Image (cartoon, rainbow, N blue to C red):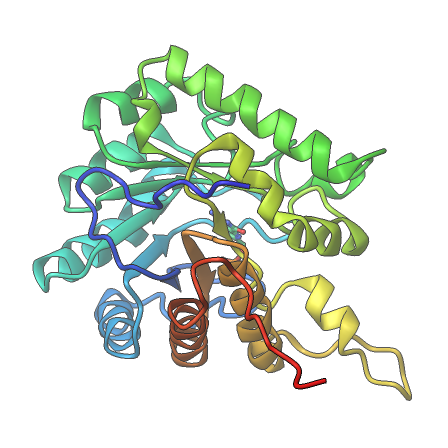
Length: 297
Ligand code: PMM
């Protein structure tokens, strides 16, 4: 499958899979909740992620872990705005992880340059028009419902085909609302209304997503499918979230090898190194895509 150029208007062309570092300014995210609630500490952590190799820092003020309840818009704004402003002032490329148009608009005014909406514009009808006005790239992730209900919505016959078709429909919807099609980034939404087997199937088939002709973002970081893969053999308990970073880097490099535009991760350094290894390998491949070895007999 022909891969699209992986460039977006107004953003750098990294020439490899980009790394989006996660900065959750929340008390309850599943793996880093509570660590960065203080705005000063959050900005410091965002700067550290950039130093470790994050090309983008994704700031979120509302947890989307399975079962999570929503916070008010005021609370979300109070959490994210000082952090977005502080990082943008330091020259960090910031994306805002929000399902609210009001938060997206205020964050772009504060310096965010990408809107990452896990609902792809479905949770707030004003989102697509707001993003269209702002003119920044927009992540349309696969989403079937809010976190307190999403586990029951993980029913598929052919997860790869259905998830891609639903994202394509949502892409059409946001473009009808005025979003420039060249600004859309697509994301299969690992862990969102997905079972463990669904996540593996989506990662295995990421290459097929190039039919959508849009840059692909993938968020495997510390997710349940990795925890279950690495479960304790004696107890069957999933590996704790903070001990899933090596597996995350491996999943990230597999996404990069399938042409992902970016991967979204908590622990940046390992993945930043891994995507560079993938890019170097690609640069050393012959144009025809395979080596011709000549046997002497
Ligand atoms: N996953 C989470 C939050 N935001 N955004 C995108 N685009 N893709 C994802 O897979 C994604 C996301 C949940 O993970 P977290 O609570 O650790 O941030």
